[in-house]
Amino acid sequence: MRLIFFFLFLSSFLQSQTITANPNPFSSRVNICFTLTANDTVTLIIYNVSGQMVATNYSNTPLPAGVYCDTIHFDNQPDGVYFASLQTKQNGPKTIKLIKSLGTDISHLTDDADLLLFPSPVADYLYFKNLRERVFKLSVMTITGKVFLIQSFDEKEGHLDLSHIAAGIYYLFIETPDQRSIKKIVKMN
Image (cartoon, rainbow, N blue to C red):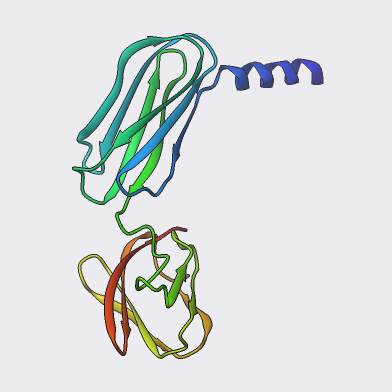
């Protein structure tokens, strides 16, 4: 009985296709990779959140079994959430979420990198290293400009607690005695 279950599980696993996106979040282009375990007919479509088709790399295209990777360019698309949908005749659709954000790299505040912020995307805490040990203020605001968190720091290292906010794209307003800047941050759950 166990042997039959194992073979059914293995057969089901071998017939499935996979789809991945790297990097994700991305700024201007993303690599979409998918695996076919058998010859199949493939359609790969990228949609925006409104359901409008943004790109099509394959449209009812017969392909042999294998691994396929394509770079999708989003240079003319706004920041936001997109969906990559892989449709095959044998296995049906698989869809993954893509996040485009020009500001996904918030590794420094100024050219001399005197305030380091990490990671991005952020899950619960946005950490900082204050290399010049000066006072600075961080404000988090929605994409509509509503400020909902303001905190000042004078420590060399610390963090900003973002665990209570929903996943999405936010702006981080950074103010030091001699500079102001705005960075985009991606909040993940």
